[in-house]
Image (cartoon, rainbow, N blue to C red; front, side):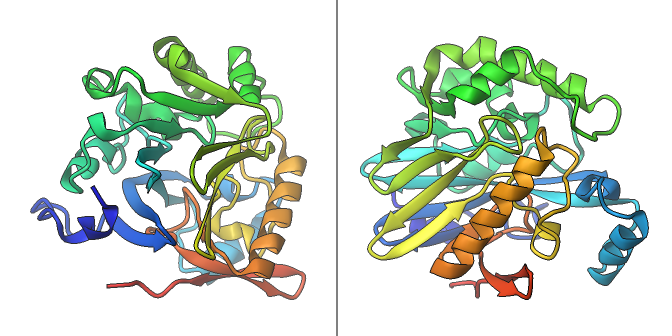
Length: 303
């Protein structure tokens, strides 16, 4: 199956009033960005090291509510070299969120059978990136030879996670810990771990960055002169203007800021496309330099 026709291959559900998938080509690599919905979180999670008034001004300037806002949840399906790769797996329903956990039925609506997925790449093991594989009935529909690619440092971290430097609402650390433990128990036998980077399929390379979590990784796509990086949780909307602001989920905030700035500088220089988990859907765009910081330039949709 080529993913380049899936935007029109199946009629959307009647209750889905906005697009939930977007297809593009990176050379010979098929890419489909799929929305898992949105997750409402406190505005303070954007930057717990920022002056509250400055943070409030940024939210107001971007027409966002002051107290809580919807964060997009994007996953990516990549097809290269005969392999179908799911990059992250969304929120799932273990901790139900009203407007999230949509991945399974949206993959079905796009004509993607779970049994066709040969590989899963995890940017990290927070619950909004692994929860979709814990939905009842999903594991039984996956291939017995499914490979799950995750950094060895990420697996080690979740065996005894340290939340001493995060700034999360009450209950989140316990929920993250519980979900990761269950995921390790259910899928650990399918793990293919790597230290620094690993080529999953032709032109599809997963690279560990650290920062957000010790084993956080990005996925770099390259084919025919085209390039795209799926940055996972390394980049948030506020991170362009304020790359030094600390997100509440970052386990090593200083390292996350350093890696974020380095990646944004690289993407601005080589002009490749960027997609990230929590950028507004479909989260396809470019990075430009703006003084001492950066700015986000959304790509024009292709029809």
